[in-house]
Structure formats: structure tokens, C-alpha cells
Image (cartoon, rainbow, N blue to C red):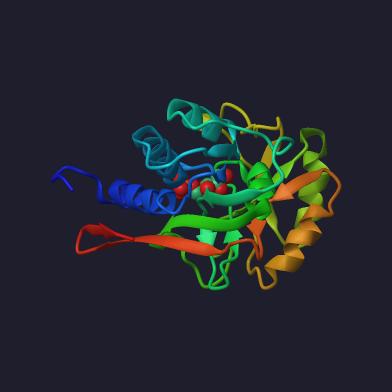
Length: 233
Ligand code: 5RP
């Protein structure tokens, strides 16, 4: 690491690279969203370019992943064209001791859940600050909602004990719009004791497309840490 390199950035890069190193030739790879996964996409591309990796096809979870995959030369496919996903690599906003997650900090959790949950192996790439004892401790729970249903969904969430807020874009110029053209409601729950039940309850509210609880989906968590100012995985 050079004297000026940001250790957090270097750590994310190391975690992303460690995940990319686990991808095998001939695989269909789910490509996640976020700043950590971006490094995994970059390194998969570099392995392809060097010839270390062959015959890879990526399935992106967002426009961000699509753009990065194209930039790094990863051929893309769709769920209509393949009958399996071998491995998916994605970030997370919180990880609990059972490897359950909160995702959706990048508003991409709906497509991420589709791709990540189809993968034979789902690898999560995070830094140690994302590890929590209980989901909802540090991060609000993202819920993607059809715009016309925003108000009734917020009322229903309040009845469940949550405090919902509409996610606004930079400088609060307007609501954040997901890749599907929907709004994101971020919800504060005092305690999430049963993530599996809450995941289903929220998705049962008419107008909700998907929420950011990922329960029982993760196989492997790669965790980056900074010890004595040195990033490690
Ligand atoms: C996007 C996500 C991201 O994976 C999550 O927000 C983590 O991102 P980062 O690696 O930038 O911290 O769920 O919807």
C-alpha cells in the first residue's frame, strides 16, 4: 500500500479481489452492486483479460453492474438464457451472526435478491463495520415500492411499528428512483427480532416490490479489516 492510499478503499479492493479469485472458468456469475463488488467485477475482468479465467458470463444486478461489466470486458447474459447461476458476489449493508443481511443501500436489492438467491454459492463482500449482532442496529431497512402506493405502504409500515422515510436523492432534488422506476422507503425498526417473518410481512403489503432483508441466502462472507492501519481479508 502506498503512503497516500486510503486504507478503507484498499481493504474493499482486497475483499473484492478475494471474491473474484474464487470464480472458476466456465461459470455463470451474478454480479452485485456497490463499491466493494465493483472491485470484484474489475478483477474478474482482469482475470479474463490475462487468460487466467475463461468462458465466464455475468448476470448483472443493476445498471451500475452492467456498465462496469461492459467496461471490464465481461460478457453478459440474462436469466432467460441460462439454467443456473454458479456463483454470485455482492456487498451488504449489515450482516448478522446467521449471515442474514440488510441490503439496498444502493437501491438495487430487488434485482440483487433475484440473482443472489438463485446462485449455487452466494459470496458476500463487506468490511468489518457491516457486522452486527442484530439486523437494523445501524442501517435503515430499504423497501422498494411502486410510486402510486407510497402513502398506503408507509401507513402499513407504521402499523407494523416502523418509522418510514422516503429516500431522497442528492441535494433532495427528488426521490431516488430504482432501476425499475420505483421509490425506496427506508424504515427504522426499533428491533428486528425475526427477520424471516418481517421479510414476508413487508412483501405482503400491496405496492411493495421487495425489501432488503436477505434471510438464509448467504453461503460465504468475506470480511475486510484494518489492523494497525493495514487492510486485511
Ligand atoms: C446495493 C447494495 C450494496 O451491495 C450495499 O449497499 C453495499 O455497498 P458497498 O459495498 O458500497 O458498501 O445492497 O443495493
